[in-house]
Image (cartoon, rainbow, N blue to C red; front, side, top):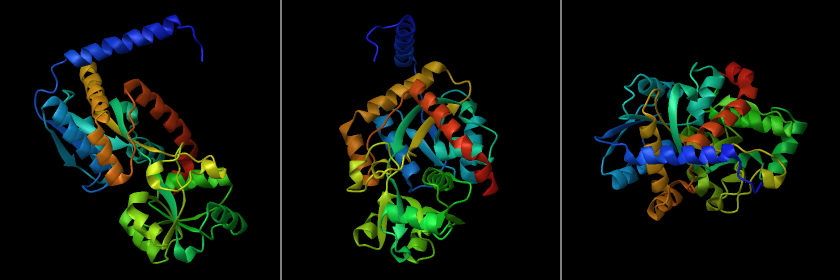
Length: 322
């Protein structure tokens, strides 16, 4: 790392300090803020939004009103926020499955640049690849060996054109294997399909299957995280097992395009304060085995650009699978 501080770095630090000062001074929020969530109540996205809202009120004294607007792969919620007044009173709570995968899969022409991204409020690091007992696959090596020796012999349950579909495609590319991909529906439907032996493999939140992994009805083959999430117990990362497969799911906070920069930065500042609250960290840990993660505005936009570039490699496959 270079010891010298360049003029450009000084400028960047100054700009960040100035934007932080503006964020602190802006008189926002002045009334309840509506948060439009791309998913139904009860799931990981909704949980993260509601937990954010709870601590937002604790810090600012103003409530966040959660509106669940599932449907269209998140495009309905995104369109609602996109057309809202850019006054800081409407926020989109989404993730890369909607904000990037939908564009790559051709479900929308909009990218994340159609919004003013404030921050990444958290990162889902609870996903694992899990196999059914009936599949006979208990390790990642067995999965790779069988999928190479007998292409399309392992049935991977997904929602075609979705985030989990992209997970499967990335895994195939990195391991030079071929899975049989079938549309197995929602997470709960995939769990039932795994238990019933109708699919062999799925990319699912650990919290949804941990009891079945614990009693031997399913097997956790790996977690696609850069570093091991210790909250998932002894589940190894794919990287630890020789496969450079990393696909974490950030939760994104975004405003309608044209929102005052001071408001966008203020929201990022409030979210940072939320992540520093030990009680918040404990709620994430207990409910979805999720460690605290946070990216400021600039870091979030850089990460989304990088992710979009990586996902675009699979554009044709995703669009064919719709």
